Image (tube, rainbow, N blue to C red; front, side, top):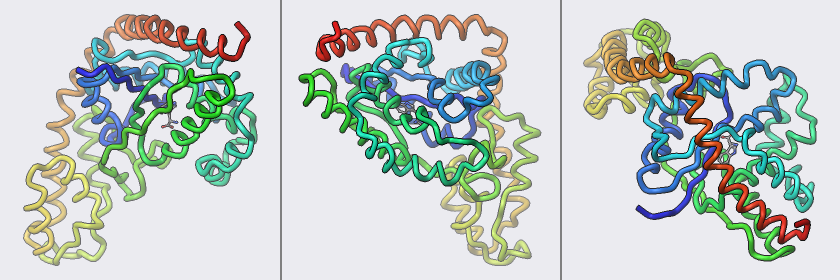
Length: 326
Ligand code: TRP
């Protein structure tokens, strides 16, 4: 056991899907063995883009925590808490916003991309522009050495390091520059082959029911060049095969069978359905147990809040002293 510290967070989007599982959670579960982990529900981050309708944020946060526990995030090993319940996140965000050059934020690739892509919301807000500063605060507050993130978050992590450096240059060595803990995570396609995403309506949930799994696998995009079962297949571009790679230990054999036209798509999908149901069954049982005991979830969040506050407060005292407001 090293005492290296990790912080990561997810925006509360309600129930999680297999993209979250294979893209992040599997890794979160693994590293809780070897690191001191802080896992935050980034509900303040959710406000930066969903400020117009906040009605679901609380329920979505609880649903997300239930899914974390369902897949094996262990509250004995990791500190699980809601960002909004530790006021130091907002406090450090304010201090760091004073020293973060506007240009850094305006040039941030995720910022430019989302402004362009998300058309149904007005994102011309101060808070949305400051998203990376809030994320930097999450990380720097806990002096986390490592941050498990996907590639899409690397620019934010780089900015966190730059902000820490700039703070330390102005006020003395207080903040720690974190490293990314990049993991080779599987890319999980959605049913339609685009990236799996709640907003595309192409996702399969963690702990999905058997009926839903069967129904969804039936709609999966397959090789369009394959008309008859005996035609040679092209597993590389097939969503069903992508899922075999995740769930089937013998996926290599399946690849060959498909290429040689030895197995039809219908049978291939049936086998996938069975494998996915096998994966989902214990998770569904665990989830149903957790659903019965909301008080337990609240207790975990209450304990997480205390532990997180303790650490956050320590850093904030140092920060304030360094800035000479304390
Ligand atoms: N921005 C991250 C995402 O969208 C979520 C997040 C918020 C985060 N604060 C963080 C991730 C701190 C890592 C560390 O996925």
